[in-house]
Every structure is written in structure tokens, then in C-alpha cells.
Length: 87
Image 1 (cartoon, helix red, strand yellow):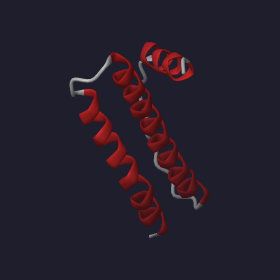
Image 2 (cartoon, rainbow, N blue to C red):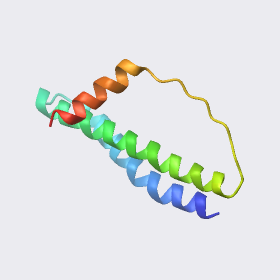
Image 3 (cartoon, rainbow, N blue to C red):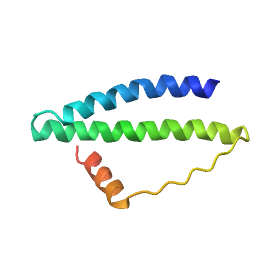
Image 4 (cartoon, rainbow, N blue to C red):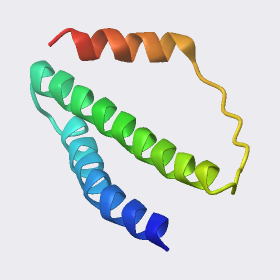
């Protein structure tokens, strides 16, 4: 139950920020604003991923293990890393 509460309490505000920034990215704004909005979006998605990992770690610690296999686009990961470090 604690995991569900923590997940909800963390993900709800993160999702609000993601949705707002996504709207901003699709509006007619300057390139600098779009670049900053993309940086915020990437940071929020990273934070959301880390929250998920922490909650899954808690499940592992309680001997409740689930295997999730993901593929990643290394070019996209590196591009996002470079973008996040450019500011």
C-alpha cells in the first residue's frame, strides 16, 4: 500500500509538469523556450523513471521481484544527456 501511495504522490505532480511542458513545446514560442521546455521534459521523465526504480527496489528488498526488460535508443540517451548539460 505504501508503494501505491508514494507512487501516486510523486507521479501526479510530475505528470502535471510533463503535460504542461508538452503543451508549451507545441505552442508557437521561441526556440530558446522550446529548448528549455524540452530540457524540463527530459528531466521530469528522468525523475519519473528514478521514482519507478526506487519503488521497484523496495519490492526487491521485500523479495517481490518482477523482471522488466527495456530497450534503449543510445543515440537518444546521449542526445538528451548533451542537451541537459548544455545549460
